[in-house]
Length: 144
Image 1 (cartoon, rainbow, N blue to C red):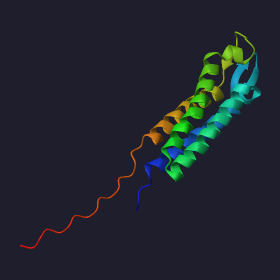
Image 2: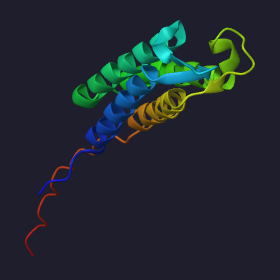
Image 3: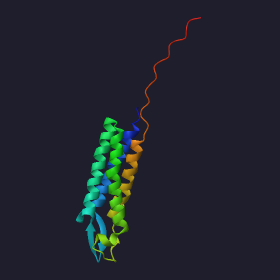
């Protein structure tokens, strides 16, 4: 039984992270006075969602075409997704219009953690060593 390539394993984890970003973005990012706000109620959630999907598309290219540059490019939108979500988490009051009594919902936590994990996976994928090329067999020793 052959073991899966590390690139494929990283890609599968990236798919899971991207799914978690999407779930987080369509879920509760903030609560205020009994009202819940989804990430996609604002541009920040939509941008986070789109950036994660773009990162996954580039990582798919990097996985199946073995293009290291595509994994490096994938890290850029992944970093954007993680950064937007983390910024909104840190400044949740401005997400709901500057209200001081707003609290962070579970969706923004999921989107933030998964976005950062997606970024890390893109970097790990980019810096995986290339498959070693098998050396040519050595010539047999001369007969005595």
